[in-house]
Length: 400
Image (cartoon, rainbow, N blue to C red):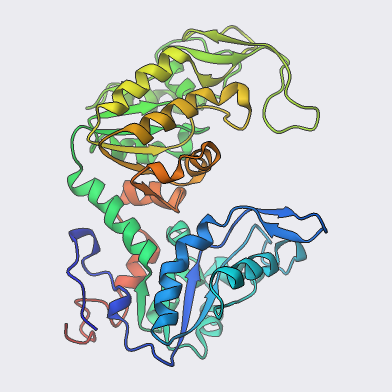
């Protein structure tokens, strides 16, 4: 096979073309089929969103079309290292059989405690009988788990098509993004994204902060934030970011819920009055979305960008009363003429919910993995692939 010319972010990473001939060989593919399930009309559990399964299909098709006997493996849910019927792979296996007949799927990897513990004996058990390994699970490439970092030390290995594209796109943002480069970051807690926020301030031209995490920044500016979510111990860190090398754009107004109100998915249903407030929120009120003035300002910054990276919703978008900010940002990202990247997780769910998933240039399959890659420029799963015996530049790799 002819090896492709690689963009800079892919150098040293083995691709499918770097595998030995797979015709007639058994290939193990680590996928990320940790998909949402729902109960069907007959009580049988079904896959409710097959985006992650469809993302792996180009790799599975390539292997199958080149004569490989393909077995996929994945985790599902949080079974805590023991078999649990709730997290059996049967619904996923059924959907995979519809989309890619002939590809087998093992039982849930996390039924065995050796998976999360990266137990060498579990790695050997996993790869027994296989001739090659492919990592097509970018969403877990930041985890040093057995199925992610173990097989490349024992088998010729490669990054799948989606993993390679993730590295190419996200790596390209770090190396040579078109300017102005705008990052839009939301979600619940600053602590979950502090590292990536620091990293982004060294890369972007403007950092737009929404979602619940914005209230820690507003508190750092001395504003009253009522009952809104605040990482009190990180207020000083946010103050440093606000005085950092790039402008941090915060909401000028918010949509807040009155004291005692209920929001989101709850048995009793959402209730309580809402009000658009400025940056100071009265006691007991909780900010749950950016306001209309902020949404317009955020959209204006996004619209003028050469590159946009969006990760995290602007509010509690699962409640329609607090979805307008996320919707406005999604519309702005979709309309932006620059290169647009959405970093998986809740942002991807919001785009899908709004019917705009096909209107961005790249939709990442990794939430936490995308953020860690941007923060560190590498992930354990990628490092393991580059150390495989067939990786470009490895002493044992066959000549190009």
